[in-house]
Every structure is written in structure tokens, then in C-alpha cells.
Length: 161
Image: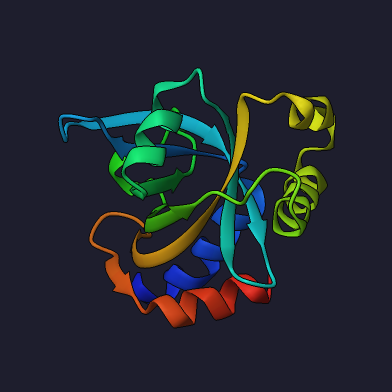
């Protein structure tokens, strides 16, 4: 099996096992800002869902500039080179469903399916759901095994998780 053959199973593994990601947004001055966010997966629409507080800088930034990037990565292991870490970066367009709307409730349910312990936080007015529509995908399955993936193919893969 070639390194490129590892892409699909490694992408599936990342999406099934990782629950947090690095979110990159742009500040008001257009400077990059990275943070960590938990994420859920909507298998029906192949969108990603985050729930973040307006007290966090990344929330203000994504509200003002809805294009962002989300990177999911395997954890480091002491005996393995960091260059071989499997990772995927999604370019995304964020939308915020109106609080208490049918769409908001739908994404709340998706999020709580993955994170039932934070149900109480969905009642906090400063927390917002954002739906992240994938617009571009770049995957690295290890050193020398990188590829830009077809978005429709990735969405189909997500729907089959």
C-alpha cells in the first residue's frame, strides 16, 4: 500500500477519534489567530459544528470574518517523528444559526450527541453555534503523503462515517 493509499483510512480515523481541532481565524487587522475548539460532525450535511463563547476572541473574529480554517491532528507519540503526524486542514465558511431557531436546535442536537456533558452551556446566551461548511481540504497522512482532496469526495466520506 502506498502512502497515498493511507489518506482515506487516516482521514476517517481522524474524524472518528478526534474531538478537538485548531481553529484559525483572522483578527480585525487581518492577522491570523489560532485557538482550540471542540467540534461535532453533521453526517447529514457533512458540515462541522462548533459551540464557542463570545468572550473568546475567536468568536468575535469568526463573526466578523466568516472564513476560517480548522485543523485536526493526531497526538504526538514519543517514539514517532512529528513530521509523520496524520492531519487534515479544512478551509471553511462559518454561519451562525439564529438562536432557538429550528436550525439552531438541529445543530445543538448534533453537538450534544458528541458532547452530552455540556448541555448546560447551550443555555448560556454568550455561547454560539457555528456551522462550518467545508470549502477546501488538505490532508497530510505522513511525511511525503500530502494531497488536496476533492471537497465533494470528502463530504461523501463524512456522510458515511
